[in-house]
Length: 135
Image (cartoon, rainbow, N blue to C red):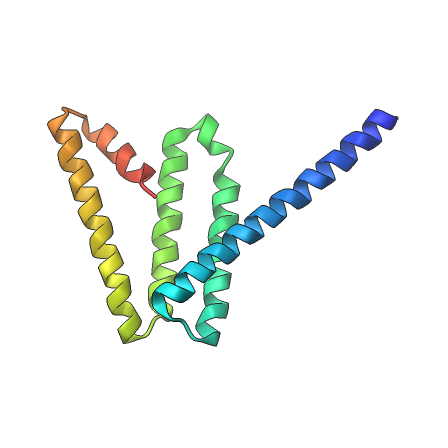
């Protein structure tokens, strides 16, 4: 009985620690976006919601990492794209210039990765996995 109570206590502690970790990650990501795009108060609230959703979704697909890597990477990429779309919708024209520069930089990184992997003789599937793994 003591072991069972100790086990429940330990699980509750780990659950709260993981929740704090996610909250910390959400806040860090939000703060990074606040400084990058110079967001106003309303945009900051929207960004917090977007980042909370992003990390909740990433947490929900985590079990797939071990069981089905391809599906995990596809879903992770979809979460990234949906997050970008949500961010893009809330930005002003001046902020969109910074956003678009970030998108261009990501595409350059993907292109360089593709070229390097092609030179190494990687298959199309390997190249796609490498692109999905980029964060």
